[in-house]
Length: 124
Length: 410
Ligand SMILES: Cc1ncc(COP(=O)(O)O)c(C=O)c1O
Image (cartoon, rainbow over all chains, first blue to last red; front, top):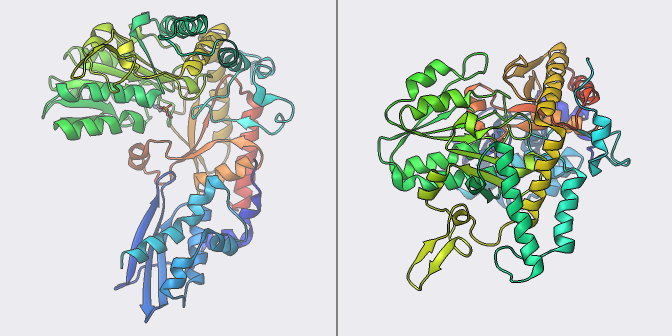
Protein backbone atom coordinates (compact mmCIF):
# COMPACT_ATOMS: atom_id res chain seq x y z
CA UNK A 1 0.00 0.00 0.00
CA UNK A 2 2.76 2.46 0.83
CA UNK A 3 4.94 3.82 -1.92
CA UNK A 4 8.54 3.19 -2.58
CA UNK A 5 10.34 6.51 -2.62
CA UNK A 6 12.58 5.21 -5.36
CA UNK A 7 10.65 7.43 -7.72
CA UNK A 8 12.25 10.51 -6.19
CA UNK A 9 15.78 9.46 -7.03
CA UNK A 10 18.22 12.17 -8.09
CA UNK A 11 17.85 11.46 -11.82
CA UNK A 12 14.11 12.15 -11.70
CA UNK A 13 14.49 15.25 -9.58
CA UNK A 14 17.18 16.55 -11.97
CA UNK A 15 14.78 16.20 -14.90
CA UNK A 16 12.10 17.94 -12.82
CA UNK A 17 14.31 20.85 -11.81
CA UNK A 18 15.99 21.22 -15.17
CA UNK A 19 13.86 19.54 -17.79
CA UNK A 20 15.38 18.85 -21.20
CA UNK A 21 13.95 20.20 -24.47
CA UNK A 22 11.94 22.99 -22.92
CA UNK A 23 10.41 25.64 -25.15
CA UNK A 24 8.13 26.02 -28.14
CA UNK A 25 8.76 25.40 -31.85
CA UNK A 26 7.23 27.46 -34.62
CA UNK A 27 5.69 25.54 -37.52
CA UNK A 28 5.68 22.28 -35.59
CA UNK A 29 3.79 19.47 -37.33
CA UNK A 30 2.52 18.24 -33.98
CA UNK A 31 1.44 20.87 -31.46
CA UNK A 32 -0.81 19.68 -28.70
CA UNK A 33 -1.54 20.36 -25.05
CA UNK A 34 -3.06 18.02 -22.47
CA UNK A 35 -4.20 18.63 -18.93
CA UNK A 36 -4.41 16.16 -16.08
CA UNK A 37 -7.67 17.34 -14.54
CA UNK A 38 -7.13 15.91 -11.07
CA UNK A 39 -4.00 17.92 -10.34
CA UNK A 40 -3.68 20.51 -13.06
CA UNK A 41 -0.46 19.10 -14.57
CA UNK A 42 -0.02 20.28 -18.14
CA UNK A 43 2.24 19.25 -21.01
CA UNK A 44 2.29 21.09 -24.34
CA UNK A 45 4.31 19.32 -26.97
CA UNK A 46 5.90 20.47 -30.25
CA UNK A 47 7.31 18.01 -32.83
CA UNK A 48 8.90 18.61 -36.23
CA UNK A 49 9.64 15.84 -38.68
CA UNK A 50 12.29 15.21 -41.26
CA UNK A 51 10.48 12.87 -43.63
CA UNK A 52 8.79 10.43 -41.27
CA UNK A 53 11.28 10.85 -38.43
CA UNK A 54 11.23 13.22 -35.46
CA UNK A 55 13.82 15.91 -36.11
CA UNK A 56 13.03 18.33 -33.33
CA UNK A 57 10.91 18.08 -30.20
CA UNK A 58 10.20 20.40 -27.31
CA UNK A 59 7.67 20.85 -24.56
CA UNK A 60 6.31 23.37 -22.10
CA UNK A 61 4.91 21.91 -18.95
CA UNK A 62 3.90 22.53 -15.43
CA UNK A 63 3.11 20.21 -12.59
CA UNK A 64 4.44 17.46 -10.39
CA UNK A 65 7.91 15.93 -10.54
CA UNK A 66 6.65 12.68 -12.07
CA UNK A 67 4.71 14.28 -14.92
CA UNK A 68 7.45 16.74 -15.78
CA UNK A 69 10.37 14.32 -15.48
CA UNK A 70 8.52 11.75 -17.58
CA UNK A 71 7.83 14.36 -20.26
CA UNK A 72 11.46 15.47 -20.22
CA UNK A 73 12.74 11.89 -20.52
CA UNK A 74 10.22 11.15 -23.27
CA UNK A 75 11.30 14.10 -25.40
CA UNK A 76 14.92 12.87 -25.21
CA UNK A 77 13.81 9.36 -26.12
CA UNK A 78 11.68 10.08 -29.19
CA UNK A 79 14.21 12.03 -31.23
CA UNK A 80 14.71 10.19 -34.53
CA UNK A 81 11.66 7.98 -34.10
CA UNK A 82 9.20 7.30 -36.92
CA UNK A 83 5.50 8.10 -36.53
CA UNK A 84 4.80 4.36 -36.34
CA UNK A 85 7.29 4.05 -33.47
CA UNK A 86 5.69 6.97 -31.67
CA UNK A 87 2.27 5.37 -32.00
CA UNK A 88 3.62 2.08 -30.70
CA UNK A 89 4.99 3.58 -27.45
CA UNK A 90 3.34 2.12 -24.37
CA UNK A 91 3.08 2.66 -20.66
CA UNK A 92 5.90 0.16 -20.19
CA UNK A 93 8.23 2.36 -22.24
CA UNK A 94 7.56 5.21 -19.82
CA UNK A 95 8.23 2.93 -16.83
CA UNK A 96 11.50 1.90 -18.48
CA UNK A 97 12.49 5.53 -19.02
CA UNK A 98 11.66 6.44 -15.43
CA UNK A 99 13.30 3.31 -14.12
CA UNK A 100 10.34 2.18 -12.02
CA UNK A 101 6.70 1.22 -12.49
CA UNK A 102 4.12 3.77 -11.38
CA UNK A 103 1.06 2.81 -9.36
CA UNK A 104 -2.54 3.75 -10.07
CA UNK A 105 -2.50 6.96 -8.06
CA UNK A 106 0.29 8.52 -10.14
CA UNK A 107 -0.21 6.76 -13.45
CA UNK A 108 -1.93 9.69 -15.13
CA UNK A 109 0.95 11.96 -14.11
CA UNK A 110 3.53 9.58 -15.56
CA UNK A 111 1.64 9.07 -18.83
CA UNK A 112 0.67 12.69 -19.47
CA UNK A 113 3.58 13.38 -21.84
CA UNK A 114 2.98 10.18 -23.81
CA UNK A 115 -0.72 10.92 -24.11
CA UNK A 116 0.08 14.43 -25.37
CA UNK A 117 2.39 13.06 -28.07
CA UNK A 118 -0.01 10.37 -29.21
CA UNK A 119 -3.18 12.49 -29.20
CA UNK A 120 -1.26 15.27 -30.98
CA UNK A 121 -0.06 12.78 -33.58
CA UNK A 122 -3.63 11.76 -34.36
CA UNK A 123 -4.48 15.35 -35.23
CA UNK A 124 -2.11 15.47 -38.24
CA UNK B 1 -0.96 20.51 23.62
CA UNK B 2 -3.81 20.41 26.12
CA UNK B 3 -5.74 17.20 26.62
CA UNK B 4 -8.08 16.40 23.74
CA UNK B 5 -11.85 16.28 24.16
CA UNK B 6 -12.06 12.68 22.99
CA UNK B 7 -9.89 9.69 23.86
CA UNK B 8 -8.70 8.47 20.48
CA UNK B 9 -7.19 5.25 21.86
CA UNK B 10 -10.71 4.26 22.85
CA UNK B 11 -12.25 5.43 19.59
CA UNK B 12 -9.73 3.44 17.56
CA UNK B 13 -11.11 0.25 19.10
CA UNK B 14 -14.33 0.94 17.16
CA UNK B 15 -12.52 1.12 13.81
CA UNK B 16 -11.30 -2.13 12.21
CA UNK B 17 -8.83 -0.12 10.10
CA UNK B 18 -6.94 0.42 13.36
CA UNK B 19 -6.54 -3.28 13.99
CA UNK B 20 -3.02 -4.17 15.05
CA UNK B 21 -1.63 -4.94 11.59
CA UNK B 22 -2.42 -1.43 10.37
CA UNK B 23 -1.63 0.63 13.44
CA UNK B 24 1.78 2.20 13.52
CA UNK B 25 1.70 3.32 9.93
CA UNK B 26 -1.84 4.40 9.33
CA UNK B 27 -2.20 8.14 9.71
CA UNK B 28 -5.51 8.94 8.10
CA UNK B 29 -5.86 12.64 7.41
CA UNK B 30 -8.36 12.43 4.56
CA UNK B 31 -11.73 12.12 6.27
CA UNK B 32 -13.08 15.05 4.23
CA UNK B 33 -12.77 12.81 1.21
CA UNK B 34 -14.34 9.81 2.94
CA UNK B 35 -14.40 8.78 6.56
CA UNK B 36 -13.36 5.48 8.10
CA UNK B 37 -16.14 3.14 9.17
CA UNK B 38 -16.75 2.09 12.77
CA UNK B 39 -17.79 -1.43 13.76
CA UNK B 40 -21.43 -0.57 14.68
CA UNK B 41 -22.03 0.62 11.10
CA UNK B 42 -20.53 -2.55 9.64
CA UNK B 43 -22.56 -4.66 12.08
CA UNK B 44 -25.80 -2.94 11.11
CA UNK B 45 -25.15 -3.48 7.41
CA UNK B 46 -24.24 -7.12 8.02
CA UNK B 47 -27.30 -7.71 10.16
CA UNK B 48 -29.45 -6.65 7.23
CA UNK B 49 -27.65 -8.91 4.77
CA UNK B 50 -27.45 -11.84 7.16
CA UNK B 51 -30.77 -11.80 8.99
CA UNK B 52 -33.52 -9.87 7.18
CA UNK B 53 -32.36 -9.45 3.61
CA UNK B 54 -35.34 -8.47 1.43
CA UNK B 55 -36.63 -5.56 -0.56
CA UNK B 56 -38.49 -2.69 1.08
CA UNK B 57 -42.06 -1.53 0.54
CA UNK B 58 -43.03 -4.60 -1.47
CA UNK B 59 -42.76 -8.03 0.15
CA UNK B 60 -45.76 -9.45 2.03
CA UNK B 61 -43.50 -11.40 4.37
CA UNK B 62 -41.57 -10.98 7.58
CA UNK B 63 -38.09 -10.18 6.25
CA UNK B 64 -39.43 -7.47 3.96
CA UNK B 65 -41.44 -6.01 6.77
CA UNK B 66 -38.37 -5.87 9.03
CA UNK B 67 -36.29 -4.34 6.23
CA UNK B 68 -38.97 -1.69 5.59
CA UNK B 69 -39.25 -0.95 9.29
CA UNK B 70 -35.48 -0.59 9.75
CA UNK B 71 -35.11 1.46 6.56
CA UNK B 72 -37.90 3.86 7.53
CA UNK B 73 -36.60 4.08 11.10
CA UNK B 74 -33.43 5.65 9.69
CA UNK B 75 -35.55 8.38 8.15
CA UNK B 76 -36.70 9.34 11.64
CA UNK B 77 -33.15 9.16 13.04
CA UNK B 78 -31.79 11.39 10.29
CA UNK B 79 -34.70 13.80 10.74
CA UNK B 80 -33.98 14.07 14.48
CA UNK B 81 -30.27 14.46 13.77
CA UNK B 82 -30.77 17.61 11.69
CA UNK B 83 -33.97 18.80 13.42
CA UNK B 84 -36.24 18.07 10.48
CA UNK B 85 -39.44 16.07 10.07
CA UNK B 86 -39.48 12.50 8.89
CA UNK B 87 -41.24 13.15 5.59
CA UNK B 88 -38.69 15.82 4.71
CA UNK B 89 -35.85 13.29 4.40
CA UNK B 90 -35.00 11.69 1.05
CA UNK B 91 -32.35 8.98 0.74
CA UNK B 92 -29.95 9.39 -2.16
CA UNK B 93 -26.56 8.09 -3.27
CA UNK B 94 -24.84 11.13 -1.81
CA UNK B 95 -24.52 14.90 -1.84
CA UNK B 96 -23.98 14.96 -5.58
CA UNK B 97 -27.24 13.20 -6.32
CA UNK B 98 -29.09 15.28 -3.72
CA UNK B 99 -27.94 18.54 -5.30
CA UNK B 100 -28.74 17.27 -8.78
CA UNK B 101 -32.30 16.48 -7.69
CA UNK B 102 -32.74 20.06 -6.51
CA UNK B 103 -31.09 21.70 -9.52
CA UNK B 104 -33.01 19.53 -11.98
CA UNK B 105 -36.25 20.31 -10.19
CA UNK B 106 -35.86 24.01 -10.88
CA UNK B 107 -35.17 23.85 -14.61
CA UNK B 108 -38.85 24.33 -15.47
CA UNK B 109 -39.31 27.12 -12.97
CA UNK B 110 -36.52 29.51 -13.91
CA UNK B 111 -36.30 31.83 -16.84
CA UNK B 112 -33.75 33.91 -18.67
CA UNK B 113 -32.43 36.71 -16.51
CA UNK B 114 -33.18 34.99 -13.19
CA UNK B 115 -30.13 34.72 -10.96
CA UNK B 116 -28.59 31.86 -9.01
CA UNK B 117 -26.15 32.94 -6.32
CA UNK B 118 -23.33 30.62 -5.22
CA UNK B 119 -20.02 31.21 -3.42
CA UNK B 120 -16.66 31.01 -5.16
CA UNK B 121 -15.74 28.02 -3.01
CA UNK B 122 -18.42 25.57 -4.07
CA UNK B 123 -17.46 21.96 -4.69
CA UNK B 124 -18.09 20.96 -8.32
CA UNK B 125 -21.16 19.09 -7.02
CA UNK B 126 -22.77 22.42 -6.09
CA UNK B 127 -21.52 24.26 -9.15
CA UNK B 128 -21.76 22.10 -12.27
CA UNK B 129 -25.48 21.20 -11.80
CA UNK B 130 -26.29 24.94 -11.57
CA UNK B 131 -24.18 25.65 -14.65
CA UNK B 132 -26.35 23.15 -16.51
CA UNK B 133 -29.51 24.82 -15.19
CA UNK B 134 -28.17 28.18 -16.34
CA UNK B 135 -27.44 26.79 -19.81
CA UNK B 136 -30.92 25.33 -20.15
CA UNK B 137 -32.82 28.33 -18.80
CA UNK B 138 -30.67 31.35 -19.63
CA UNK B 139 -30.41 32.33 -15.99
CA UNK B 140 -27.24 33.86 -14.63
CA UNK B 141 -24.79 32.55 -12.03
CA UNK B 142 -23.39 35.00 -9.52
CA UNK B 143 -20.59 34.25 -7.07
CA UNK B 144 -20.11 35.61 -3.58
CA UNK B 145 -16.39 36.37 -3.25
CA UNK B 146 -14.04 35.85 -0.32
CA UNK B 147 -12.28 38.44 1.76
CA UNK B 148 -8.51 38.27 1.98
CA UNK B 149 -8.81 36.20 5.17
CA UNK B 150 -10.71 33.51 3.20
CA UNK B 151 -14.05 34.27 4.84
CA UNK B 152 -17.25 35.09 2.97
CA UNK B 153 -17.53 38.74 1.96
CA UNK B 154 -20.92 39.39 3.49
CA UNK B 155 -21.07 42.97 2.17
CA UNK B 156 -20.61 41.66 -1.34
CA UNK B 157 -23.30 39.06 -0.63
CA UNK B 158 -25.68 41.85 0.34
CA UNK B 159 -25.07 43.52 -2.99
CA UNK B 160 -25.33 40.29 -5.01
CA UNK B 161 -28.51 38.93 -3.46
CA UNK B 162 -31.44 40.93 -4.79
CA UNK B 163 -34.85 40.84 -6.46
CA UNK B 164 -33.52 38.78 -9.38
CA UNK B 165 -32.12 36.10 -7.06
CA UNK B 166 -34.21 32.96 -7.34
CA UNK B 167 -31.82 30.48 -5.77
CA UNK B 168 -29.01 30.75 -3.24
CA UNK B 169 -26.92 27.57 -3.12
CA UNK B 170 -24.00 27.60 -0.70
CA UNK B 171 -21.74 25.22 1.09
CA UNK B 172 -21.91 25.22 4.87
CA UNK B 173 -18.20 24.50 5.17
CA UNK B 174 -15.55 24.54 2.45
CA UNK B 175 -13.85 21.26 1.57
CA UNK B 176 -10.75 23.21 0.49
CA UNK B 177 -10.32 26.14 2.87
CA UNK B 178 -12.21 24.86 5.90
CA UNK B 179 -14.13 28.14 6.07
CA UNK B 180 -17.55 27.96 7.69
CA UNK B 181 -20.06 29.95 5.66
CA UNK B 182 -22.59 32.11 7.56
CA UNK B 183 -25.37 30.23 5.77
CA UNK B 184 -28.16 31.34 8.13
CA UNK B 185 -27.28 34.97 7.56
CA UNK B 186 -27.15 34.47 3.80
CA UNK B 187 -30.46 32.57 3.92
CA UNK B 188 -32.08 35.57 5.59
CA UNK B 189 -30.86 37.83 2.80
CA UNK B 190 -32.14 35.41 0.16
CA UNK B 191 -35.50 34.82 1.79
CA UNK B 192 -36.08 38.57 1.93
CA UNK B 193 -36.29 38.28 -1.85
CA UNK B 194 -38.28 35.02 -1.73
CA UNK B 195 -35.33 33.04 -3.13
CA UNK B 196 -34.94 29.33 -2.45
CA UNK B 197 -32.01 28.43 -0.18
CA UNK B 198 -29.95 25.28 -0.79
CA UNK B 199 -27.19 24.26 1.62
CA UNK B 200 -24.41 21.76 0.90
CA UNK B 201 -23.61 20.26 4.30
CA UNK B 202 -21.25 17.54 3.02
CA UNK B 203 -18.30 18.79 5.07
CA UNK B 204 -20.25 20.05 8.05
CA UNK B 205 -22.29 16.98 8.90
CA UNK B 206 -20.84 14.95 11.73
CA UNK B 207 -18.28 17.65 12.48
CA UNK B 208 -20.31 20.64 13.63
CA UNK B 209 -23.97 20.91 14.64
CA UNK B 210 -26.32 21.08 11.65
CA UNK B 211 -29.83 22.34 12.39
CA UNK B 212 -32.12 23.00 9.43
CA UNK B 213 -34.42 25.14 11.58
CA UNK B 214 -31.60 27.48 12.59
CA UNK B 215 -30.27 27.59 9.04
CA UNK B 216 -33.82 28.08 7.76
CA UNK B 217 -32.76 26.50 4.48
CA UNK B 218 -35.23 25.08 2.00
CA UNK B 219 -32.96 22.21 1.01
CA UNK B 220 -29.89 20.63 2.59
CA UNK B 221 -27.67 17.87 1.19
CA UNK B 222 -25.07 15.58 2.70
CA UNK B 223 -23.34 12.22 2.21
CA UNK B 224 -23.30 9.25 4.55
CA UNK B 225 -19.75 8.26 3.68
CA UNK B 226 -18.28 11.47 5.10
CA UNK B 227 -19.90 10.90 8.50
CA UNK B 228 -18.80 7.31 9.18
CA UNK B 229 -21.58 5.76 7.10
CA UNK B 230 -21.35 3.47 4.07
CA UNK B 231 -20.47 4.76 0.60
CA UNK B 232 -23.39 5.25 -1.74
CA UNK B 233 -25.63 6.81 0.88
CA UNK B 234 -26.76 10.37 1.15
CA UNK B 235 -29.58 12.60 2.21
CA UNK B 236 -31.60 15.38 0.73
CA UNK B 237 -33.61 17.38 3.21
CA UNK B 238 -36.34 19.61 1.80
CA UNK B 239 -39.09 21.62 3.43
CA UNK B 240 -42.27 19.68 2.81
CA UNK B 241 -43.92 22.43 0.77
CA UNK B 242 -40.82 22.53 -1.44
CA UNK B 243 -40.68 18.78 -1.93
CA UNK B 244 -44.36 18.62 -2.85
CA UNK B 245 -43.92 20.92 -5.83
CA UNK B 246 -40.43 19.77 -6.91
CA UNK B 247 -40.28 17.46 -9.93
CA UNK B 248 -38.45 14.18 -9.36
CA UNK B 249 -35.19 13.40 -11.17
CA UNK B 250 -35.66 9.64 -11.53
CA UNK B 251 -38.76 7.81 -12.63
CA UNK B 252 -39.73 4.17 -12.15
CA UNK B 253 -40.90 1.80 -9.46
CA UNK B 254 -41.80 2.92 -5.93
CA UNK B 255 -42.00 6.61 -6.80
CA UNK B 256 -45.45 6.24 -8.41
CA UNK B 257 -48.99 6.11 -7.07
CA UNK B 258 -50.90 4.95 -10.13
CA UNK B 259 -49.70 3.99 -13.58
CA UNK B 260 -51.60 3.46 -16.84
CA UNK B 261 -50.03 2.71 -20.20
CA UNK B 262 -49.92 6.42 -20.96
CA UNK B 263 -49.57 8.14 -17.62
CA UNK B 264 -48.46 8.01 -14.03
CA UNK B 265 -49.07 9.97 -10.84
CA UNK B 266 -46.44 10.41 -8.16
CA UNK B 267 -46.22 8.81 -4.76
CA UNK B 268 -46.24 11.00 -1.64
CA UNK B 269 -43.19 12.87 -0.46
CA UNK B 270 -40.52 11.61 0.25
CA UNK B 271 -40.96 8.36 -1.74
CA UNK B 272 -41.67 10.38 -4.89
CA UNK B 273 -37.90 10.95 -5.01
CA UNK B 274 -36.79 7.39 -4.30
CA UNK B 275 -37.34 5.56 -7.58
CA UNK B 276 -36.24 1.95 -7.78
CA UNK B 277 -34.78 -0.31 -5.10
CA UNK B 278 -32.76 1.91 -2.81
CA UNK B 279 -29.45 1.18 -1.09
CA UNK B 280 -31.21 -0.57 1.78
CA UNK B 281 -28.15 -1.96 3.54
CA UNK B 282 -26.40 1.37 3.10
CA UNK B 283 -29.27 3.36 4.58
CA UNK B 284 -29.41 1.00 7.55
CA UNK B 285 -25.67 1.58 7.98
CA UNK B 286 -26.27 5.31 7.77
CA UNK B 287 -28.72 4.99 10.67
CA UNK B 288 -26.00 3.32 12.72
CA UNK B 289 -23.58 6.11 11.77
CA UNK B 290 -26.06 8.73 12.99
CA UNK B 291 -26.41 6.84 16.27
CA UNK B 292 -22.62 6.55 16.56
CA UNK B 293 -22.10 10.29 16.06
CA UNK B 294 -24.89 11.09 18.51
CA UNK B 295 -23.41 8.75 21.10
CA UNK B 296 -20.07 10.54 20.96
CA UNK B 297 -21.85 13.88 20.63
CA UNK B 298 -21.42 16.48 17.92
CA UNK B 299 -20.36 19.14 20.44
CA UNK B 300 -17.55 16.95 21.73
CA UNK B 301 -16.51 16.06 18.21
CA UNK B 302 -16.43 19.72 17.20
CA UNK B 303 -14.33 20.59 20.27
CA UNK B 304 -11.89 17.72 19.60
CA UNK B 305 -11.44 18.69 15.98
CA UNK B 306 -11.08 22.39 16.82
CA UNK B 307 -8.25 21.61 19.29
CA UNK B 308 -6.47 19.50 16.69
CA UNK B 309 -7.02 22.12 13.98
CA UNK B 310 -5.32 24.70 16.19
CA UNK B 311 -2.42 22.31 16.71
CA UNK B 312 -2.17 21.56 12.98
CA UNK B 313 -2.15 25.26 12.09
CA UNK B 314 0.58 25.86 14.66
CA UNK B 315 2.72 22.90 13.55
CA UNK B 316 2.41 23.71 9.85
CA UNK B 317 3.11 27.40 10.33
CA UNK B 318 6.36 26.49 12.12
CA UNK B 319 7.72 24.83 8.97
CA UNK B 320 9.52 27.24 6.64
CA UNK B 321 8.08 27.41 3.09
CA UNK B 322 4.68 26.13 4.22
CA UNK B 323 1.74 28.49 3.65
CA UNK B 324 -1.75 27.88 5.00
CA UNK B 325 -4.42 28.40 2.37
CA UNK B 326 -7.51 29.22 4.36
CA UNK B 327 -8.30 31.04 7.58
CA UNK B 328 -5.28 30.81 9.88
CA UNK B 329 -7.56 30.99 12.89
CA UNK B 330 -9.60 28.33 14.65
CA UNK B 331 -12.80 30.37 14.79
CA UNK B 332 -15.46 29.73 12.14
CA UNK B 333 -13.57 26.95 10.47
CA UNK B 334 -13.68 23.17 10.37
CA UNK B 335 -10.81 20.69 10.55
CA UNK B 336 -9.98 20.89 6.86
CA UNK B 337 -6.63 22.59 6.28
CA UNK B 338 -5.12 23.25 2.88
CA UNK B 339 -1.51 24.25 2.53
CA UNK B 340 1.21 24.79 0.03
CA UNK B 341 4.88 23.86 0.25
CA UNK B 342 6.85 26.23 -1.97
CA UNK B 343 8.66 24.35 -4.73
CA UNK B 344 6.79 21.08 -4.35
CA UNK B 345 3.73 19.87 -6.18
CA UNK B 346 0.94 18.56 -3.89
CA UNK B 347 0.99 15.19 -5.65
CA UNK B 348 4.68 14.71 -4.95
CA UNK B 349 4.19 15.64 -1.33
CA UNK B 350 1.22 13.28 -1.00
CA UNK B 351 3.24 10.43 -2.50
CA UNK B 352 6.18 11.00 -0.15
CA UNK B 353 3.85 11.22 2.85
CA UNK B 354 2.22 7.97 1.78
CA UNK B 355 5.57 6.20 2.14
CA UNK B 356 5.19 6.81 5.88
CA UNK B 357 1.53 5.87 5.93
CA UNK B 358 0.33 9.48 6.09
CA UNK B 359 -2.80 9.81 3.94
CA UNK B 360 -3.57 13.31 2.67
CA UNK B 361 -5.11 14.60 -0.50
CA UNK B 362 -3.28 16.67 -3.10
CA UNK B 363 -4.88 18.48 -6.01
CA UNK B 364 -7.91 20.61 -6.75
CA UNK B 365 -10.34 18.92 -4.37
CA UNK B 366 -13.14 19.26 -6.92
CA UNK B 367 -12.97 23.04 -6.67
CA UNK B 368 -10.91 23.96 -9.71
CA UNK B 369 -12.27 27.51 -10.22
CA UNK B 370 -11.53 28.43 -6.59
CA UNK B 371 -7.93 27.22 -6.67
CA UNK B 372 -7.26 28.86 -10.00
CA UNK B 373 -8.75 32.15 -8.84
CA UNK B 374 -6.54 32.00 -5.75
CA UNK B 375 -3.55 31.37 -8.02
CA UNK B 376 -2.88 27.78 -6.95
CA UNK B 377 -2.70 26.24 -10.41
CA UNK B 378 -1.34 22.97 -9.00
CA UNK B 379 -3.97 22.76 -6.29
CA UNK B 380 -3.06 22.30 -2.64
CA UNK B 381 -2.22 19.58 -0.17
CA UNK B 382 -5.04 19.07 2.29
CA UNK B 383 -5.31 17.43 5.67
CA UNK B 384 -8.72 16.81 7.16
CA UNK B 385 -9.59 15.67 10.64
CA UNK B 386 -12.14 13.50 12.33
CA UNK B 387 -12.64 11.77 15.66
CA UNK B 388 -9.97 9.19 14.84
CA UNK B 389 -7.16 11.74 14.80
CA UNK B 390 -4.90 12.92 17.59
CA UNK B 391 -1.78 15.04 17.96
CA UNK B 392 0.48 12.14 16.90
CA UNK B 393 -1.11 12.27 13.44
CA UNK B 394 -0.29 15.96 13.11
CA UNK B 395 3.27 15.28 14.26
CA UNK B 396 3.64 12.48 11.69
CA UNK B 397 2.46 14.86 9.00
CA UNK B 398 4.90 17.56 10.06
CA UNK B 399 7.77 15.04 10.10
CA UNK B 400 6.75 13.82 6.65
CA UNK B 401 6.76 17.35 5.24
CA UNK B 402 10.28 17.89 6.58
CA UNK B 403 11.40 14.63 4.98
CA UNK B 404 9.85 15.62 1.63
CA UNK B 405 11.58 18.98 1.77
CA UNK B 406 14.87 17.19 2.31
CA UNK B 407 14.30 14.89 -0.69
CA UNK B 408 13.43 17.90 -2.84
CA UNK B 409 16.31 19.89 -1.27
CA UNK B 410 14.01 22.76 -0.33
C1 LIG C 1 -18.46 20.40 0.04
C2 LIG C 1 -18.75 19.15 -0.74
N1 LIG C 1 -19.86 19.08 -1.48
C3 LIG C 1 -20.17 17.98 -2.18
C4 LIG C 1 -19.37 16.86 -2.18
C5 LIG C 1 -19.75 15.67 -3.00
O1 LIG C 1 -20.06 14.60 -2.19
P1 LIG C 1 -20.26 13.14 -2.79
O2 LIG C 1 -19.05 12.84 -3.60
O3 LIG C 1 -20.39 12.27 -1.59
O4 LIG C 1 -21.50 13.17 -3.62
C6 LIG C 1 -18.21 16.89 -1.42
C7 LIG C 1 -17.30 15.71 -1.41
O5 LIG C 1 -16.13 15.77 -1.61
C8 LIG C 1 -17.89 18.06 -0.69
O6 LIG C 1 -16.77 18.12 0.04
